[in-house]
Length: 394
Image (cartoon, rainbow, N blue to C red):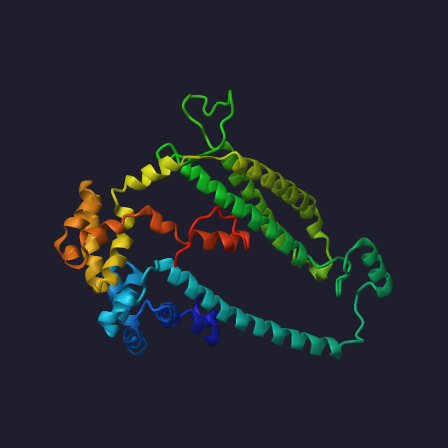
Protein backbone atom coordinates (compact mmCIF):
# COMPACT_ATOMS: atom_id res chain seq x y z
CA UNK A 1 0.00 0.00 0.00
CA UNK A 2 1.22 3.51 -0.73
CA UNK A 3 2.61 5.44 2.23
CA UNK A 4 -0.28 7.91 2.16
CA UNK A 5 -2.68 5.27 3.49
CA UNK A 6 -0.26 3.31 5.69
CA UNK A 7 -0.21 3.88 9.43
CA UNK A 8 3.26 3.19 10.87
CA UNK A 9 2.40 0.37 13.29
CA UNK A 10 0.50 -1.60 10.66
CA UNK A 11 3.02 -0.77 7.96
CA UNK A 12 5.89 -2.21 10.02
CA UNK A 13 4.21 -5.64 10.05
CA UNK A 14 4.51 -5.86 6.26
CA UNK A 15 8.08 -4.66 5.76
CA UNK A 16 10.78 -6.99 4.42
CA UNK A 17 12.52 -6.67 7.78
CA UNK A 18 9.44 -7.92 9.63
CA UNK A 19 8.76 -10.67 7.09
CA UNK A 20 12.30 -12.05 7.33
CA UNK A 21 12.18 -11.77 11.12
CA UNK A 22 9.06 -13.94 11.16
CA UNK A 23 10.75 -16.40 8.80
CA UNK A 24 13.67 -16.60 11.22
CA UNK A 25 11.32 -17.11 14.17
CA UNK A 26 9.69 -20.03 12.36
CA UNK A 27 13.03 -21.61 11.49
CA UNK A 28 14.28 -21.19 15.06
CA UNK A 29 11.07 -22.64 16.50
CA UNK A 30 11.54 -25.74 14.34
CA UNK A 31 15.13 -26.03 15.53
CA UNK A 32 14.04 -25.69 19.16
CA UNK A 33 11.49 -28.49 18.82
CA UNK A 34 13.91 -30.72 16.95
CA UNK A 35 16.50 -30.00 19.62
CA UNK A 36 14.07 -31.12 22.32
CA UNK A 37 13.56 -34.34 20.35
CA UNK A 38 17.30 -34.96 20.27
CA UNK A 39 17.55 -34.35 16.53
CA UNK A 40 19.92 -31.39 16.88
CA UNK A 41 22.94 -31.51 19.21
CA UNK A 42 22.69 -29.10 22.15
CA UNK A 43 25.87 -27.22 21.23
CA UNK A 44 24.70 -26.82 17.61
CA UNK A 45 21.34 -25.51 18.79
CA UNK A 46 23.10 -23.03 21.04
CA UNK A 47 25.21 -21.84 18.13
CA UNK A 48 22.11 -21.37 15.97
CA UNK A 49 20.38 -19.40 18.73
CA UNK A 50 23.40 -17.16 19.24
CA UNK A 51 24.45 -16.50 15.68
CA UNK A 52 21.33 -16.66 13.49
CA UNK A 53 20.68 -13.28 11.93
CA UNK A 54 19.91 -11.78 8.53
CA UNK A 55 20.64 -8.74 6.44
CA UNK A 56 17.85 -7.49 4.16
CA UNK A 57 20.17 -5.87 1.61
CA UNK A 58 22.28 -9.04 1.39
CA UNK A 59 19.19 -11.20 0.91
CA UNK A 60 18.02 -9.00 -1.95
CA UNK A 61 21.44 -9.22 -3.57
CA UNK A 62 21.53 -13.04 -3.29
CA UNK A 63 17.98 -13.27 -4.61
CA UNK A 64 19.04 -11.50 -7.79
CA UNK A 65 21.34 -14.45 -8.45
CA UNK A 66 19.36 -17.47 -7.21
CA UNK A 67 15.89 -16.15 -8.17
CA UNK A 68 14.40 -17.57 -4.96
CA UNK A 69 13.66 -15.46 -1.89
CA UNK A 70 13.64 -18.27 0.70
CA UNK A 71 16.92 -19.73 -0.58
CA UNK A 72 18.41 -16.24 -0.52
CA UNK A 73 17.23 -15.86 3.08
CA UNK A 74 18.64 -19.25 4.12
CA UNK A 75 21.95 -18.55 2.39
CA UNK A 76 22.32 -15.27 4.23
CA UNK A 77 21.33 -16.74 7.61
CA UNK A 78 23.58 -19.72 7.01
CA UNK A 79 26.57 -17.46 6.45
CA UNK A 80 26.10 -16.02 9.93
CA UNK A 81 25.65 -19.41 11.61
CA UNK A 82 28.36 -21.47 9.96
CA UNK A 83 28.42 -25.29 9.60
CA UNK A 84 25.54 -25.78 12.06
CA UNK A 85 23.26 -24.03 9.55
CA UNK A 86 22.69 -27.48 8.04
CA UNK A 87 20.12 -28.03 10.79
CA UNK A 88 18.12 -24.97 9.72
CA UNK A 89 15.21 -25.60 7.32
CA UNK A 90 15.83 -29.34 7.67
CA UNK A 91 12.94 -31.23 6.06
CA UNK A 92 10.98 -28.06 5.34
CA UNK A 93 9.81 -26.61 2.08
CA UNK A 94 9.51 -22.91 1.37
CA UNK A 95 5.76 -22.75 1.95
CA UNK A 96 6.17 -24.30 5.41
CA UNK A 97 8.06 -21.20 6.40
CA UNK A 98 6.19 -18.64 4.31
CA UNK A 99 2.67 -19.70 5.29
CA UNK A 100 3.50 -20.10 8.99
CA UNK A 101 5.19 -16.71 9.08
CA UNK A 102 2.25 -15.21 7.17
CA UNK A 103 -0.08 -16.53 9.86
CA UNK A 104 2.01 -14.67 12.45
CA UNK A 105 1.84 -11.48 10.39
CA UNK A 106 -1.91 -11.83 9.94
CA UNK A 107 -2.29 -12.42 13.67
CA UNK A 108 -0.34 -9.24 14.39
CA UNK A 109 -2.37 -7.29 11.84
CA UNK A 110 -5.61 -8.70 13.27
CA UNK A 111 -4.63 -7.59 16.77
CA UNK A 112 -4.21 -4.05 15.48
CA UNK A 113 -7.51 -4.20 13.61
CA UNK A 114 -9.35 -5.55 16.66
CA UNK A 115 -7.86 -2.73 18.67
CA UNK A 116 -9.14 -0.30 16.06
CA UNK A 117 -12.62 -1.81 16.21
CA UNK A 118 -12.64 -1.55 20.01
CA UNK A 119 -11.66 2.11 19.86
CA UNK A 120 -14.39 2.75 17.30
CA UNK A 121 -16.95 0.97 19.49
CA UNK A 122 -15.96 3.13 22.45
CA UNK A 123 -16.40 6.32 20.43
CA UNK A 124 -19.72 5.15 18.98
CA UNK A 125 -20.99 4.29 22.44
CA UNK A 126 -19.93 7.67 23.78
CA UNK A 127 -21.60 9.54 20.94
CA UNK A 128 -24.72 7.39 21.15
CA UNK A 129 -25.07 8.18 24.85
CA UNK A 130 -24.45 11.83 24.05
CA UNK A 131 -27.40 11.79 21.61
CA UNK A 132 -29.51 9.27 23.48
CA UNK A 133 -32.57 11.53 23.33
CA UNK A 134 -31.91 13.14 19.95
CA UNK A 135 -34.90 12.61 17.65
CA UNK A 136 -34.50 11.63 14.00
CA UNK A 137 -36.44 9.62 11.41
CA UNK A 138 -36.98 6.03 12.58
CA UNK A 139 -39.64 3.44 13.49
CA UNK A 140 -40.68 2.94 17.04
CA UNK A 141 -44.14 1.34 16.96
CA UNK A 142 -43.19 -2.26 17.80
CA UNK A 143 -42.42 -2.91 21.44
CA UNK A 144 -39.02 -4.64 21.80
CA UNK A 145 -40.69 -7.20 24.08
CA UNK A 146 -43.06 -8.12 21.25
CA UNK A 147 -40.10 -8.39 18.88
CA UNK A 148 -38.27 -10.70 21.29
CA UNK A 149 -41.33 -12.86 21.90
CA UNK A 150 -42.09 -13.23 18.20
CA UNK A 151 -38.48 -14.12 17.36
CA UNK A 152 -38.40 -16.62 20.23
CA UNK A 153 -41.59 -18.25 18.93
CA UNK A 154 -40.00 -18.56 15.47
CA UNK A 155 -36.67 -19.84 16.77
CA UNK A 156 -34.84 -16.64 15.90
CA UNK A 157 -32.87 -14.03 17.81
CA UNK A 158 -33.70 -10.33 17.48
CA UNK A 159 -31.09 -7.99 16.09
CA UNK A 160 -29.65 -5.68 18.78
CA UNK A 161 -30.77 -2.71 16.71
CA UNK A 162 -32.37 -2.26 13.31
CA UNK A 163 -33.98 0.41 11.16
CA UNK A 164 -36.76 -0.21 8.65
CA UNK A 165 -34.75 -3.20 7.50
CA UNK A 166 -32.29 -5.63 8.99
CA UNK A 167 -28.68 -4.67 8.33
CA UNK A 168 -27.36 -6.56 5.32
CA UNK A 169 -23.88 -7.32 6.67
CA UNK A 170 -25.13 -10.63 8.06
CA UNK A 171 -26.63 -11.57 4.70
CA UNK A 172 -23.33 -10.74 3.03
CA UNK A 173 -21.50 -12.95 5.52
CA UNK A 174 -23.93 -15.80 4.79
CA UNK A 175 -23.48 -15.56 1.02
CA UNK A 176 -19.71 -15.21 1.47
CA UNK A 177 -19.69 -18.53 3.35
CA UNK A 178 -21.66 -20.09 0.50
CA UNK A 179 -19.11 -18.70 -1.95
CA UNK A 180 -16.19 -20.05 0.08
CA UNK A 181 -17.81 -23.49 0.22
CA UNK A 182 -18.47 -23.41 -3.53
CA UNK A 183 -14.87 -22.34 -4.10
CA UNK A 184 -13.60 -25.29 -2.06
CA UNK A 185 -15.64 -27.63 -4.24
CA UNK A 186 -14.18 -25.82 -7.26
CA UNK A 187 -10.69 -26.39 -5.84
CA UNK A 188 -11.28 -30.13 -5.54
CA UNK A 189 -12.99 -30.30 -8.93
CA UNK A 190 -10.12 -28.46 -10.62
CA UNK A 191 -7.62 -30.91 -9.15
CA UNK A 192 -9.65 -33.84 -10.44
CA UNK A 193 -9.89 -32.21 -13.88
CA UNK A 194 -6.12 -31.90 -13.99
CA UNK A 195 -5.53 -35.45 -12.80
CA UNK A 196 -7.95 -36.74 -15.45
CA UNK A 197 -5.90 -35.24 -18.29
CA UNK A 198 -4.93 -37.90 -20.83
CA UNK A 199 -1.21 -37.45 -20.12
CA UNK A 200 -1.71 -37.79 -16.35
CA UNK A 201 -4.83 -40.02 -15.98
CA UNK A 202 -4.50 -40.74 -12.25
CA UNK A 203 -8.21 -40.38 -11.45
CA UNK A 204 -11.34 -40.29 -13.55
CA UNK A 205 -14.99 -39.44 -13.20
CA UNK A 206 -17.27 -42.43 -13.55
CA UNK A 207 -18.01 -42.91 -17.25
CA UNK A 208 -21.34 -44.68 -17.60
CA UNK A 209 -22.36 -47.24 -20.20
CA UNK A 210 -23.31 -45.47 -23.45
CA UNK A 211 -21.88 -42.10 -22.36
CA UNK A 212 -20.00 -40.07 -24.98
CA UNK A 213 -17.22 -37.63 -24.18
CA UNK A 214 -16.81 -35.73 -27.44
CA UNK A 215 -18.74 -35.21 -30.66
CA UNK A 216 -15.52 -35.38 -32.67
CA UNK A 217 -13.13 -37.65 -30.73
CA UNK A 218 -14.61 -40.98 -29.65
CA UNK A 219 -11.77 -41.71 -27.22
CA UNK A 220 -12.46 -38.73 -24.95
CA UNK A 221 -13.78 -39.18 -21.41
CA UNK A 222 -14.21 -35.59 -20.27
CA UNK A 223 -14.57 -34.56 -16.59
CA UNK A 224 -17.91 -32.92 -17.35
CA UNK A 225 -19.13 -33.06 -13.76
CA UNK A 226 -16.10 -31.24 -12.40
CA UNK A 227 -16.22 -28.71 -15.22
CA UNK A 228 -19.85 -28.03 -14.39
CA UNK A 229 -19.01 -27.54 -10.71
CA UNK A 230 -16.19 -25.12 -11.52
CA UNK A 231 -18.55 -23.08 -13.67
CA UNK A 232 -21.30 -22.95 -11.05
CA UNK A 233 -18.81 -21.86 -8.38
CA UNK A 234 -18.16 -18.73 -10.43
CA UNK A 235 -21.83 -17.82 -10.19
CA UNK A 236 -21.90 -18.21 -6.41
CA UNK A 237 -18.72 -16.13 -6.07
CA UNK A 238 -20.24 -13.40 -8.24
CA UNK A 239 -23.34 -13.41 -6.04
CA UNK A 240 -21.15 -12.79 -2.99
CA UNK A 241 -20.00 -9.54 -4.58
CA UNK A 242 -23.62 -8.45 -5.00
CA UNK A 243 -24.30 -9.33 -1.35
CA UNK A 244 -21.40 -7.13 -0.28
CA UNK A 245 -22.77 -4.27 -2.38
CA UNK A 246 -26.07 -4.64 -0.49
CA UNK A 247 -24.44 -3.74 2.82
CA UNK A 248 -24.34 -0.03 2.01
CA UNK A 249 -27.85 1.44 1.82
CA UNK A 250 -29.12 5.03 1.79
CA UNK A 251 -29.94 6.17 5.29
CA UNK A 252 -29.44 2.51 6.30
CA UNK A 253 -32.97 1.77 5.14
CA UNK A 254 -33.48 1.81 1.35
CA UNK A 255 -34.59 -1.32 -0.49
CA UNK A 256 -32.06 -1.40 -3.31
CA UNK A 257 -30.87 -4.69 -1.82
CA UNK A 258 -34.24 -6.32 -2.40
CA UNK A 259 -34.05 -6.74 -6.18
CA UNK A 260 -30.61 -8.31 -5.97
CA UNK A 261 -31.58 -10.62 -3.12
CA UNK A 262 -34.53 -11.97 -5.07
CA UNK A 263 -31.87 -13.48 -7.34
CA UNK A 264 -28.72 -14.08 -5.32
CA UNK A 265 -30.20 -15.72 -2.20
CA UNK A 266 -32.35 -18.35 -3.93
CA UNK A 267 -29.76 -18.92 -6.65
CA UNK A 268 -26.81 -19.26 -4.27
CA UNK A 269 -28.51 -21.70 -1.93
CA UNK A 270 -30.04 -23.71 -4.79
CA UNK A 271 -26.71 -23.89 -6.62
CA UNK A 272 -24.68 -24.88 -3.56
CA UNK A 273 -27.24 -27.53 -2.64
CA UNK A 274 -26.90 -28.96 -6.13
CA UNK A 275 -23.11 -28.69 -6.07
CA UNK A 276 -22.82 -30.53 -2.76
CA UNK A 277 -25.01 -33.37 -3.98
CA UNK A 278 -23.30 -33.53 -7.39
CA UNK A 279 -19.83 -33.54 -5.89
CA UNK A 280 -20.73 -36.15 -3.27
CA UNK A 281 -21.94 -38.48 -6.02
CA UNK A 282 -18.87 -37.72 -8.11
CA UNK A 283 -16.42 -38.51 -5.31
CA UNK A 284 -18.34 -41.64 -4.35
CA UNK A 285 -17.91 -43.01 -7.87
CA UNK A 286 -14.46 -41.57 -8.60
CA UNK A 287 -12.15 -44.05 -10.30
CA UNK A 288 -8.60 -44.02 -8.90
CA UNK A 289 -5.59 -45.47 -10.70
CA UNK A 290 -2.85 -46.14 -8.08
CA UNK A 291 -0.60 -47.91 -10.55
CA UNK A 292 -0.77 -44.94 -12.91
CA UNK A 293 0.20 -42.66 -10.01
CA UNK A 294 3.23 -44.81 -9.30
CA UNK A 295 4.07 -44.89 -12.99
CA UNK A 296 3.96 -41.09 -13.16
CA UNK A 297 6.23 -40.83 -10.12
CA UNK A 298 8.68 -43.21 -11.73
CA UNK A 299 8.65 -41.16 -14.95
CA UNK A 300 10.71 -38.56 -13.08
CA UNK A 301 13.56 -41.11 -13.02
CA UNK A 302 13.96 -40.58 -9.28
CA UNK A 303 13.94 -36.78 -9.27
CA UNK A 304 11.07 -36.66 -6.76
CA UNK A 305 13.54 -38.02 -4.18
CA UNK A 306 16.01 -35.14 -4.51
CA UNK A 307 14.98 -33.74 -1.10
CA UNK A 308 15.48 -37.16 0.49
CA UNK A 309 19.07 -37.22 -0.78
CA UNK A 310 19.61 -33.65 0.38
CA UNK A 311 18.34 -34.45 3.89
CA UNK A 312 20.43 -37.60 4.10
CA UNK A 313 23.54 -35.57 3.26
CA UNK A 314 22.67 -32.99 5.90
CA UNK A 315 22.10 -35.71 8.51
CA UNK A 316 25.51 -37.12 7.65
CA UNK A 317 27.19 -33.76 8.28
CA UNK A 318 27.40 -32.08 4.88
CA UNK A 319 26.90 -28.32 4.70
CA UNK A 320 23.59 -27.13 3.20
CA UNK A 321 25.13 -25.11 0.38
CA UNK A 322 27.48 -27.92 -0.64
CA UNK A 323 24.83 -30.64 -0.37
CA UNK A 324 22.33 -28.58 -2.36
CA UNK A 325 24.94 -27.99 -5.08
CA UNK A 326 25.77 -31.70 -5.35
CA UNK A 327 22.16 -32.83 -5.51
CA UNK A 328 21.14 -30.09 -7.93
CA UNK A 329 24.07 -30.98 -10.18
CA UNK A 330 22.82 -34.56 -10.48
CA UNK A 331 19.21 -33.46 -10.78
CA UNK A 332 19.91 -31.00 -13.60
CA UNK A 333 21.88 -33.63 -15.49
CA UNK A 334 18.98 -36.07 -15.14
CA UNK A 335 16.55 -33.36 -16.21
CA UNK A 336 18.52 -32.43 -19.31
CA UNK A 337 19.66 -35.87 -20.48
CA UNK A 338 16.86 -38.20 -19.34
CA UNK A 339 19.43 -40.04 -17.23
CA UNK A 340 18.37 -41.83 -14.04
CA UNK A 341 18.76 -39.54 -11.03
CA UNK A 342 19.24 -42.42 -8.63
CA UNK A 343 22.13 -43.77 -10.69
CA UNK A 344 23.68 -40.34 -11.05
CA UNK A 345 23.46 -39.66 -7.31
CA UNK A 346 24.88 -43.08 -6.55
CA UNK A 347 27.85 -42.43 -8.82
CA UNK A 348 28.54 -38.83 -7.77
CA UNK A 349 31.94 -38.70 -6.04
CA UNK A 350 30.97 -35.95 -3.61
CA UNK A 351 27.76 -37.66 -2.55
CA UNK A 352 29.51 -41.03 -2.22
CA UNK A 353 32.05 -39.49 0.14
CA UNK A 354 29.20 -38.83 2.55
CA UNK A 355 26.65 -41.59 1.88
CA UNK A 356 27.25 -45.28 1.28
CA UNK A 357 25.18 -47.22 -1.33
CA UNK A 358 22.77 -48.53 1.31
CA UNK A 359 22.05 -45.01 2.60
CA UNK A 360 21.50 -43.77 -0.95
CA UNK A 361 19.13 -46.62 -1.74
CA UNK A 362 17.10 -45.85 1.40
CA UNK A 363 16.44 -42.35 0.07
CA UNK A 364 14.39 -43.79 -2.79
CA UNK A 365 11.88 -45.68 -0.63
CA UNK A 366 8.26 -44.65 -1.29
CA UNK A 367 7.19 -46.14 2.03
CA UNK A 368 9.10 -43.57 4.06
CA UNK A 369 6.70 -40.89 2.81
CA UNK A 370 3.73 -42.62 4.48
CA UNK A 371 5.08 -42.74 8.01
CA UNK A 372 2.94 -39.84 9.26
CA UNK A 373 -0.28 -40.85 7.52
CA UNK A 374 -2.06 -41.89 10.74
CA UNK A 375 -1.43 -38.48 12.28
CA UNK A 376 -2.91 -36.75 9.26
CA UNK A 377 -5.97 -38.99 9.33
CA UNK A 378 -6.49 -38.37 13.06
CA UNK A 379 -6.34 -34.62 12.48
CA UNK A 380 -8.96 -34.86 9.74
CA UNK A 381 -11.26 -37.64 10.93
CA UNK A 382 -10.88 -37.56 14.72
CA UNK A 383 -9.54 -39.88 17.38
CA UNK A 384 -9.78 -43.17 15.50
CA UNK A 385 -8.41 -41.52 12.36
CA UNK A 386 -10.23 -43.94 10.11
CA UNK A 387 -7.03 -45.99 10.04
CA UNK A 388 -6.61 -49.52 8.85
CA UNK A 389 -3.56 -50.46 10.84
CA UNK A 390 -0.95 -48.29 9.13
CA UNK A 391 2.08 -47.00 10.96
CA UNK A 392 3.03 -43.54 12.15
CA UNK A 393 6.72 -43.45 12.92
CA UNK A 394 8.23 -40.21 14.16
